[in-house]
Image 1: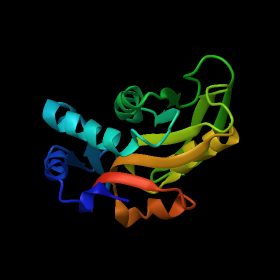
Image 2: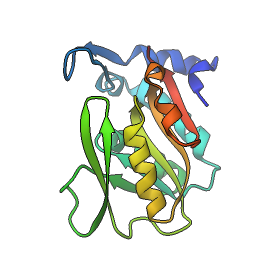
Image 3: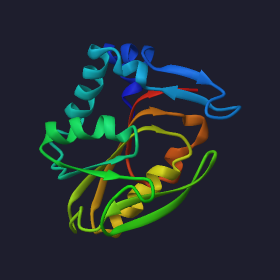
Length: 182
């Protein structure tokens, strides 16, 4: 499901605020910079409103945000829908006991960690990140949450790079995005 095919005027305004930076962080990557969106309070509010409108009546108890930009979008969604926020972090950033999941990125390998006990069995979870490219990060997040016993209801991203086919790697989990970038 994508809002980007909607006739909602907020979508075009949001897309226009995302800066594309060529060859960052390495040659050939077209980096989608959301910091320019954050500089526009109306566009940022519209972004959050679109996510909240979608999730406010879905009985979600956990919003899991992926480091780092999932930490920008996840907490406001969690607060607005009455869910807890669970940070999914890079290695050695969380104190205490964690579970880990390694994954492959479009330009390397990485790992996500989550505190043991942050998610209870049968909780309904939403995974939030700024962007889906190859889908490796979202797959790792889904795996972490499911290993803890949560039901991942959906993944939500501001941006999708559909040419990289990350959606296909999500094993049938629904993905909701606001804008596509080709």
